[in-house]
Amino acid sequence: MMHLSQQINYAPIAQIANPIMHIASPFTGKVHPLSQHPEPLFASGMLGPGVCVKLNTAMMLAPCPARVEKISQQGCEFILRAKSGLLMLLHLLLPTEYRKTEHLIQHSYGKKQVAMNDVLCYFDVPGDIEILGTLILLNADKLGPCYYPLNQVTAGKDPLITLSRACNL
Image (cartoon, rainbow, N blue to C red; front, side):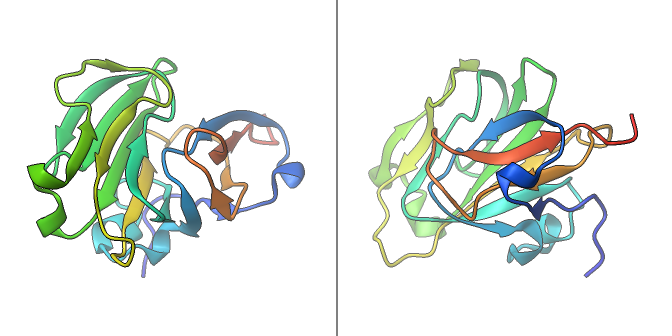
């Protein structure tokens, strides 16, 4: 599959040269390259570089203080703008039958601003259902290299993506 944006590859955090910013993980689970996403629109990198996480629970936290630009996909997709200007798409892929109100534990509907670690959405989903969380950097064309520094992340505690300054600046 052709990749339309730079890929975010794994690199241990101690080996990332010139790290300038860490984006906190909005998810808890195992991290995978975006190319492994089942949706071609995401996997191709058409929207931008990112990573996906196989989740332990259907919960998504705000990775930083941000303005909520848009909520869609039955409350499972958020576009957030960080104070730095970074535009992020956060997406929770879960079966349609679990996106209903009776499965909704908590949500950020109506909020214009979110603080770091605010619950964006949290659904009650059985443990045997596969859930995938995705974070895509929508305006990353001017950024230097990006990496995911951990193979396993905890929401609100671990960095999901590390941005580094390009070495030739």
